Length: 496
Image 1 (cartoon, rainbow, N blue to C red):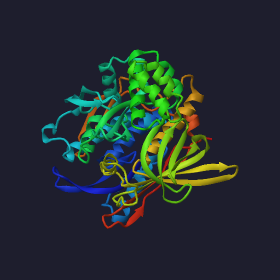
Image 2: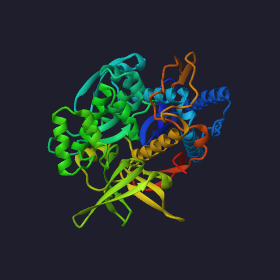
Image 3: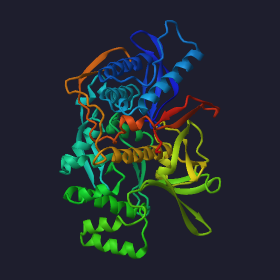
Image 4: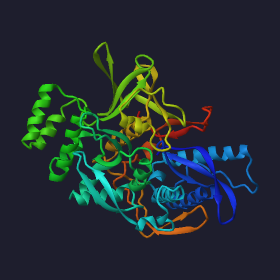
């Protein structure tokens, strides 16, 4: 989980008639919630007690309380300290998967969404975990499901309902996940979907899509497979529903140009699809170079030359870039196992003139949410023996690229650490526990343990996590475009 607190806002308390500071919290590069100090302190206390039960230590100290009002300098110091605290908690393999942590962030998203008017006033005072709604979920074949869920349901809960709708057996649910995508309905456009981010258990898919639709109405929730290792395909091919889902995603990726094939291969695939040979279609597609990869919009990269425009794909244990020079297409591959570390730098509220031109769906994605408008992913790569080089990619999807690299590393390390590569050894919260949330006005609400993390991204074991390191730097800027750096954010992203 990538945390940053680039700025704050002054909020008004109607009950006391006073103002207080709210900290704008971004997760994985996207605005998630606004919390005041006492709310974050309440989260810290819950985590501290839970860590004591597990006989582990919190990775960082929480900034102390102060009796007197904070000066501007003290406020900035507290913001940086809170950011550093959340960054280390998000980096920790056990704490980031704790139900206390994810449930608190989910409740914070709900409160912030209500307070900022994203939801209508009719929901004020309602328990969003009990308010029923219909969420439209897209499958890869452009078929939509009308899913009955609750506003406060997290990603795993919604995914479980989707799997029940399509009658997918429970044991295959962990192989799929939900993405937030920007879709184009034009039949003339090859790339109809631009991936925004993968939805996680600390957020409500309904609320995340609702907020995103304030900036682009074409933002939707889509089901895609959640793994990188193509060997997991073999078990999905044996079950009719999972076979259908995998087939439709593969066919869609080929239509969108995410999987490249020669004309004669495309003709054979079209014939297989026409005759309903789904398993044979997938087996043939599995032989293609970009099968199982995620395709990103056009980006700027400083390799081999500065300001080179490239198409980035991530999958098959590598990051590949395709560039066009003198009418020829060149492909360069960077193996994940040769990346020493990587970092993401975010510039908030800067102009996007430096980004390469893309389709309108990608342009909408650039303005989506309160997200940074200029992101850079830089990774240190072992070019040859004793020759390390930093390579920088400028893209509005840089944070998603980083998340993809991290999940790929997680999967690789879990494959070494468990039999099937998808098991997690994170201690489970007991069902009898009661989770608490402190709202902005100080009211404490208690809810029973309900979240499930069985569908979440596989997490690293504690031993392996201790040897991982990478850095994300977030930079804030004012409307006048002057910028000032914030504390660096450390997260796991190293594979030795």
